[in-house]
Length: 188
Image (cartoon, rainbow, N blue to C red; front, side):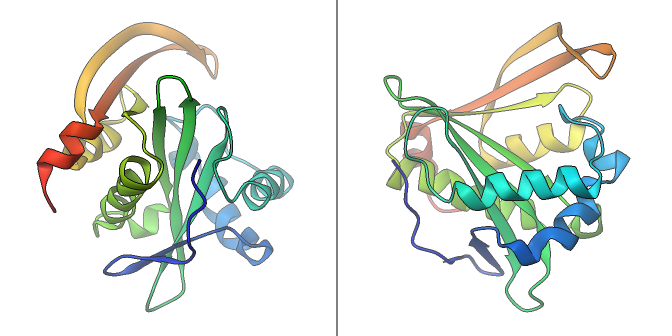
């Protein structure tokens, strides 16, 4: 179980629950083909982005296996919504979770995703008590693979043509980190 004490501050960012006022900014990046390219969903219209936002607002905590907590990532100085990082509770008995991230391309290249995801990993291991956290990505998504590597997750698998997504078979890579690896890595 994870009930974050919001907002969560990092050096430059606030991780917070989503709010209804985030719709324009969320839709601005969810509608982009380059954002949805390697995701399971296609570019979203405003109604689909609103449905996605409703889920995020209604689930500000991890209460049970299967829940997904999505953090809005806001720049502390500008108040801009930069993207989101999520933590899914995959298995209660195995104490396993999954991390994911989606950022507005206008904010790529500044280390925001790494800063936010590092904090979510800390929450996963130190507050939620997870034993293992994985990250999955389309194997063509080099940026996600590089970020997971920089976060300290190790590549564990490359599944060839294991999912049929948007009309094509796609490869998937899986990265992972254990709580003991998190503890041994020290502060970034």
